Length: 280
Image (cartoon, rainbow, N blue to C red):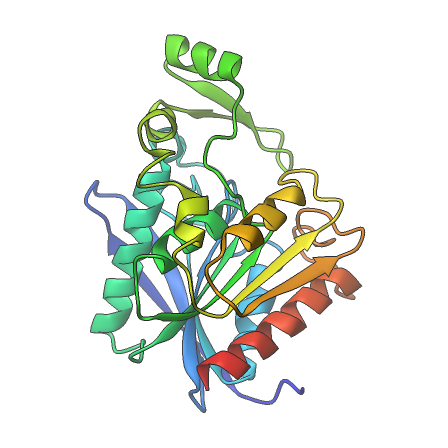
């Protein structure tokens, strides 16, 4: 499967209800087969590691790709540095889901989406993609890498201290920064983890083709979470892509190394083929 299609990138910038920026790019494929919206994970951003390569690979294969930074990503004007501490502090799962709906609406207005489209998410972005796909019948194919199966990812003691202090520290392993997260995320966990933001319940309502990729040595989201998602899925066409020895990013780093790690290339290649098969 060669990368043969020309690619044109078109930036966009929209504001959400909180007055925060949602910035991204539309990667246009010249011979259009469909479109995929790409969701990054916690502490991720669209310029990180494998995301540009994934978007370009999809576009060169005829699948246009929309990449964007969630408004609470904390990423500043250069697209890579965590300089928007206030936006990160106030972020939540609910806000990310709303940002995704906003991007979808913008794409519709710009006529970037056909009647049906695909959705991709990595890690926390995978959880957001699952929640959205369960509610949006226009999503016709879903691919998740190392997706979370629950938003409740902190211990009871950690959540108690978080509530008492009104904030919790999040270490960015790449930069060494300690990023503070306010209680909006904690509110989501305590109030909505078993209702509106229940990822496994959402998975049980997904009946579309779904590619679930996960590494067996994932240090951030245990491999067992992919098994829970597959077990919960309503779809009879779930495809599991197990990456033996794969970590949370399938060997990718930021910036992405050359040559591209074999595990990274494997998941990208299969994901491109998956969407080409489902969105033609």
